[in-house]
Each structure stands twice: as C-alpha cells, then as structure tokens.
Amino acid sequence: EIVLTQSPASLSLSPGERATLSCRASQSLNTFLLWYQQRPGQAPRLLVDDACNRATGIPARFSGSGSGTDFTLTISSLEPEDSAVYYCQQRSRWPLTFGGGTKVEI
Amino acid sequence: EVQLLESGGGLVQPGGSLRLSCVASGLSFSDYDMSWVRQAPGKGLEWVSAIHGESATYYADSVRGRFTISRVNSKNTLFLQMNSLRAEDTAIYYCAKHNWVDWGQGTRVTVSS
Image (cartoon, rainbow over all chains, first blue to last red):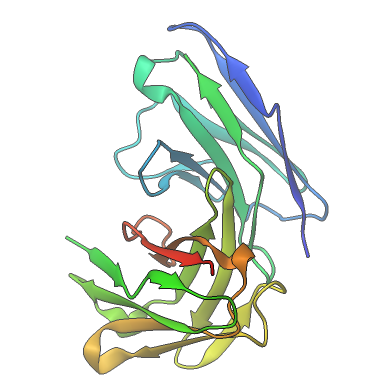
C-alpha cells in the first residue's frame, strides 16, 4: 500500500499570505496525485488532478506541482473561505490511499 | 448536472449488516468507475472500495472479506454490502465518480450496541 504523508498537520496564516502544503508518497506516483479541499460538514471538493491540473472552476490561486514522490499544493494568496482541511490522494496503484490531511486556519 | 445520492445508513449493532445505495443521475452511469470513501468522526478520508468497469472490484485491507461493492447499471445504482460490522466502521460513507469531481453528500453509519 502506498502511504501518503502530509505536512504540516496544521497551519495558521493571515489573509493574503501564501500557504505551501506538502504530500510525500512512499513510492513513485508519476503524477497520479489529486488534491482536495474539505470544509466542515461538506463532501471533499477536487482542486487539482494529475498533480498540477486545476479542476474546472477552481480559482487560480490554487496550484499543484511535483511528480514521483514529492508534491506541493500552493495557495498563493489566502482568502478567508480557504479555511479547510486539505487532502492528497493517489490513484497510481490499488488500493487507493489518502494522506492524513493538513488543516489550514485563516 | 451530476447528482449522487447515498442512502441506507443508520445505527447497527456490532456484527450486523447494512446495505448502502448510491443513485446517480445526470450521467451515463455505466461509463464510469465508482468508489466508496468513508470518514470516521473527526478523522480523515479513507478509500473503501471501487468497482472498475463492469465487475472488477478493489477493497481496502480494512474491509476486504466483509464488504462487497456492486452496481446495477440499468438502475444507475451503486451498492456497498457491509457485513460483520465493527465499531471502527462508524463513519460517513460517500460515493464518488472516478473523475473525482462528483461526490454524494454521504450517508452516516453508526456501529454501536
């Protein structure tokens, strides 16, 4: 099973600041890595697929990068509504797995 | 607009069974692989099971041998049969289409005596 390790577990930033979230895989994923945002009481919302492709309707301040085992989600200028938990997920190999999440507080 | 609507959750005793359903609309259901993903209270997301094409199925180690995923394409419905339920299966269960954009709102399963 591929283990995804997200860091940091949480971070607290101010509006307008930049957030950098990390996801490290125990095996190479090529670019088969997704990022989600989840607000309390809501289903996950896809932000980025294939490591760097923003999903339809996702603001440009969200960007993904990386390949192999190291991936990053960057939120360039935080908005208050970006307070949420962010998860990475790999779809490279079965079983699919999620990272433990990073909580972003603004 | 794609809609996924889960049902079948509830309170069940340890060792019991439940069958979850996910009815899809607004898509050609048979064209898509589907997954179940769960989230225990206050915890992160955990992938549970997927059905790939007509019949290839995959499971997390934590549920293999106890849960069975299936689908009826003519009814646009995905199922998750859950047997031998344990307290640690308590979670919100989401169905998701494998574009990973479309998710249901979840159905809550509580395993408790």
